[in-house]
Image (cartoon, rainbow, N blue to C red):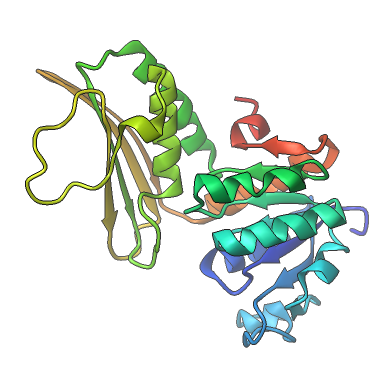
Length: 269
């Protein structure tokens, strides 16, 4: 076991954090060596297995990320933009692969990851699942094949706890559609419809965000023209798919040169 890559999970107490811990512990290809939480959190100083209501795992949650990262070959991070930027600096110091599933990052925040990528591998994606990344490629191809007679709408649905909209996955799909059309998403994005907005602008890429219940994640890319519609859809029913994808990315990055990568690189797409 000692020769397996050591993984640290940040935001350990969160929904994804706990799922990631369980996924790493269940894996025969990696080992859990650390769990990070913010200072003052109830989990700090507790064995994470006991904190999750189960048996001890021999890993105590800490609020000292650099100490945890120093023992690891990879860090898996589904937290918040400001925290992710700080973790990127520390992971680079530790020369650990930094897998980022954090959503809601602005272009300016993403740019702040660049210095760390000169020293360590960063794998960042709005969604870690195989299916969504295939959907991204399909979206790009369909958008390239159809002209602006087809309006493009990205419709996403998530649980009522989600704090950002549109989702990272929806934006990833929008970027793919824009790339397929040879335009920049920032120039054609429409995600603020309310009231009397006027007619839809030709060539825009629209976004609709639905929040409710315990929806794990559903994404539709709608291509609508006069007389016909094409719908590409992905539905996630279990959060485990994201955790498995993140672990795959952490393992994939072990022998790669420093730089920024995404799940398309990991999956060979």
